[in-house]
Image (cartoon, rainbow, N blue to C red; front, side, top):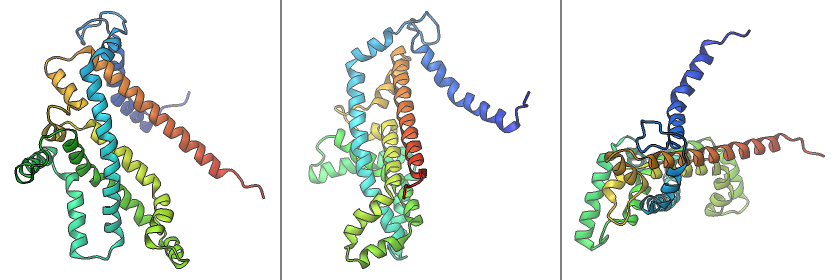
Length: 272
């Protein structure tokens, strides 16, 4: 019988530590009792009540839209910032931009949310816009701090690129703009996708910044969950969390499967 090594034991311990709470949550999402800590029998009724709760459904749809718009805008802003950080000559302006774009990574979310709230309030007093905080202000706020993560991911990829390919394209007559979209963007597309997915997850999960930047008409899913938990954990929250875990697991499996197929296709010998 093969003995377990120390690394294998620690691996299984780490997996158990990470996924045991999720497994308990999934099991208790089928609890028939209203008390989440008392098992009252197997029942899927909370899933039915979850889909009848219009407040949660509206919050899910709002969070998904904000996360999509924010991650898309963050990719655009973060890519431009990363391009400046890696391709422009070293100067005080480049150093200032690098420090400013990475500041949200270490800044507490409370400070970021409060500063954005004060900005929106002063802009409303001076220019009359935004008239009220809502989905638009949350989108701006999430795009602001998500762009920093995208800039870090994309800049690391840009530093590894072989610039001779871009120089060859420009020597053949391509403009810098065409070279960027035809040559550079396809080569950094994995980093762009990684930054988009990271921004989507951060925006979907954010509570603190959204609480400062949102108004009565833009309640996100974390805000609804947090307010409901403060009044007592509802079994519907367990059902909602189970569906989120299932969705994330499915996306992760599909991403792994597509990456594996692409890797196998690249390793296939080319018939001469």
